[in-house]
Image 1 (tube, helix red, strand yellow):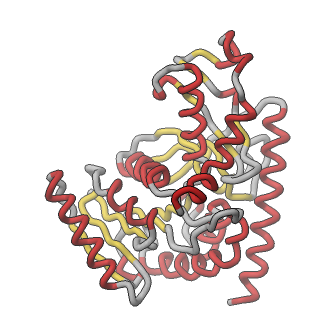
Image 2 (tube, one colour):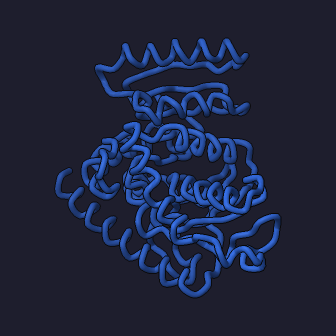
Image 3 (cartoon, one colour):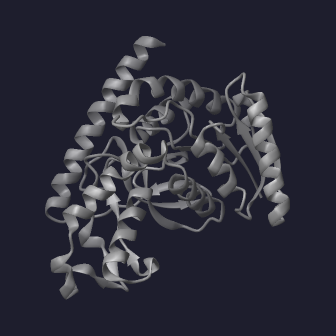
Length: 317
């Protein structure tokens, strides 16, 4: 059984993640952490969640705090803390502001819960994963980010709809930045186990339009309803369940790579990785044609932003 802590639990994503994670059978304790001054709100969240537990028959010990050190002895710490993206704002516009929050949070986590797995959701998630890894002092395999997991699921849904098949029949991945430079792996996309290029109807697939939809999904949802909640919340729960269940599934998350993808590395970015109770382990892969170029460009972009943020962050501390 496991203790899961959610930092930033008063935000929309943090609140819904608390609901989805509470359904995981391996979780028997959950701590919601928010900013000082939000005690009443946190108490209300716990009360509301407890009612939902009673309705569905879930037994999870639930508590709240405004002190991150109460996350001690956590198995997984989910960090959603930060300034949310506004309509029309790029994820990278948030970089320095959120890096200050993440650096302080990660530093505390590294001291109070050094055996935890730290799961970053705060945007821009690839950069924040690197910041969290540096300031927590945790080993690379125990720090990761949501990355392109949700983007991959969005593409999977669009492909399933186009081919009129159940979504479980589609396997696809998006790697690279969780943002504009993300790269779809069409070479690794299958439907019912059949490589997508071997399906005659693939020639008519609106691949470019699909990727445009995936890239702008977050912006569209934020424009229409203010924030993304349900997609990220369910994606978070999937990854937590995979880790706590020691499932060894290969999912596409933001993790630190050295040379696993065509010798490209020294960056935190979305790549296929094996997830289990010991952490996150990127797997070596080979890409094809434009995928290599696209991934290299994505890595250069994220590495540049990460370097700039780290340098500016050091000057503010």
